[in-house]
Length: 176
Image 1 (cartoon, rainbow, N blue to C red):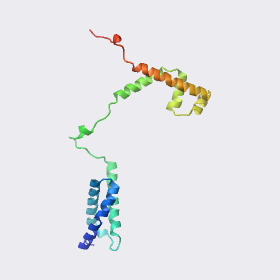
Image 2 (cartoon, one colour):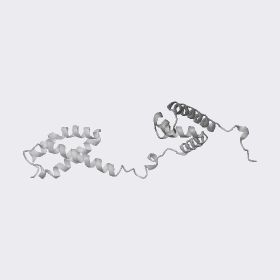
Image 3 (spheres, helix red, strand yellow):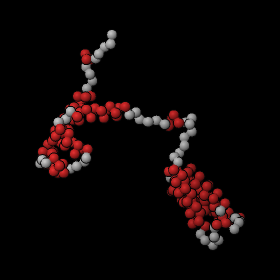
Image 4 (cartoon, rainbow, N blue to C red):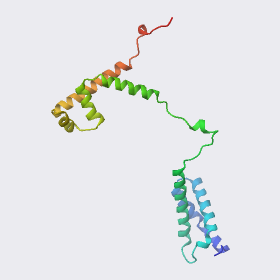
């Protein structure tokens, strides 16, 4: 079936509806216009697949929907490419040195805790167990677990504060 002038006018009359639908799918006017343009190109190229007497709008909406699904699949498989000249502006990562230092300080402070305090913090803080389960595992009362968690957190906080204190100037080693 060949595209006639009447068919072209019927397709043209559907463009506002296609744009509105495409905008709902893409969330932006520019992306919607591109989607409609691509969909109209496909519809015109494959107009011989349209069955006369069926709903033209539904057929066009199906094309828009399928084109959007194809775009989404392509995007998921291959993220947006950035030209190499623009890469330094967009390719930045957060420095991780400070994170590594904080983690090392935490490990040092955690290691200085007494064994009962390390155990209870590992169960409650790290493993996410409630006080009741931690009490059963440790073989102590729930109140003892609560008390140990409180004291362990306070001790850990003090240890971390000590580690974060700057070294007094008098202790600096001056190379001559």
